[in-house]
Amino acid sequence: MKSKTKRLKEKANNFMFDHYVLKRIVHELHGGFFAVLAGLIFAFGFCSFISPSNPGAEGVEGFKIITGGVSGLSQNVAKIFEMCGVKLADTTIEGIGYAAFNVPLMIFAFLMIGKRFSIHTIINVAVSSILIVLLPQTDFVKNIVSSSLIKDQVIARTIFAALCTGISSALAFKGELSCGGIDIVTYYFSLRKSTSVGKYGILINGIIISSYSLLLIINNPGNLSVPVLSLFYSIIYLLVVNFIIDFINLRNKKVQVEIITQREDLPQILLTMFPHGATVVKGTGAYSHQEKTILYMIVSSYEYKKVVAFARKADPHAFVS
Image (cartoon, rainbow, N blue to C red; front, top):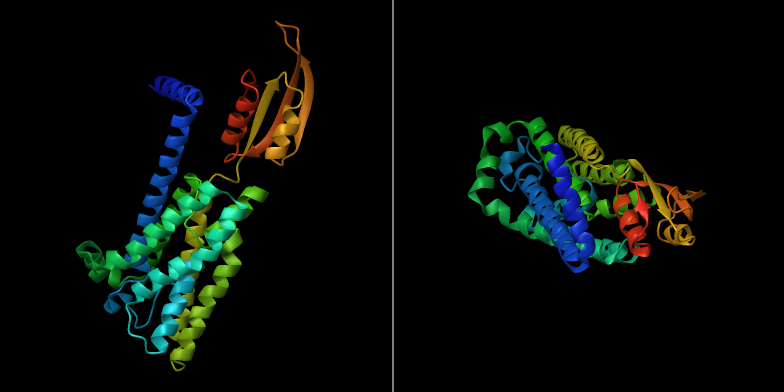
C-alpha cells in the first residue's frame, strides 16, 4: 500500500513537472487553502479563548490572555481605548487594529520575501480580521465562551488558545506564507539563517505582554493580582505556541541534495539563487564515459523542493538525489 502511494505521488510530481501552468495553479490554490484555514483557526482561538467578547468569560475580572505580536498590540490598543472611555466591542477594535498593524509588515514581506508570500499572507490576515469581528456573534462561539468548562478554567483557555495559534502559524508556514505580524519577521529570519523559528519573536512578545500588564496596573493600581496573572498565563501561552510551531514546522531541518549534471555552470547558477555553501566534484559516467559535474548542497527542508525544481529547469537531463 505504501509503495503504491509512493508511486502515485511520483507520477503526480512527474506530471506536474511536464505541465508547468497547471503546477503553478495547484501551487497557488495550495497556498490559498492554507491561508484561509490558518486564518479560520486563529480567529476561532482568539474569539473563543484569548479575548472572548463576553466579559463573564474572563474568569477573573479584567483578565485576558495576551498573545504578543500584532494581535497583542491590538489588545493593548483596545485596552487604551477602554481606559479612555471609548465604548466599542474589544473584538471590533482588535480586528481593525490587527489589520492596520499588518500594513507596514506586508510591505516589508513584499520587498524582502516575495510577492506570492505577501499575497497569501494578506489573504490570511483579511480572513482573520473579518472573522475576529464576526465569530463572536455566532452561537457556536457564544456557547464555548459561556461554558463553565472554559469560563472558569483559565489554564484550559491558555492551552486551547496556544494550540489554535500554534497550529495556525505552523499550517501557514507549511503553505509558504505566514499569519502576519511577528510571523513575517520570524519567517524571514528562518529563511535567511535556517534555524529555529519560534525564538525570534520572544523578545518582542515579552515587551508587548509586559506593556499590557503595565496598562492594567495603571488602570487599577490597587490590584496587582490581575496584571501578574495576566503576565504569567501569557508567558505560558507564548511558550506553548513557540513549541508547537517549532515541533510542526521543519524549516530548521537540513537536507543534502546531490545533483549530477553536464552543465559546468550549474553550481554557480544555483549558488546565485540559493546562497549556501556547496561542494563540486568532477566525475565520469560509467556508461557514457562523459565528464560530469557532481554538486552537493546542504539546504533547509523548506528549500530543497525549489532547488530540485530549479536544477531540473536549468538542466532537464540532470540527475537529482
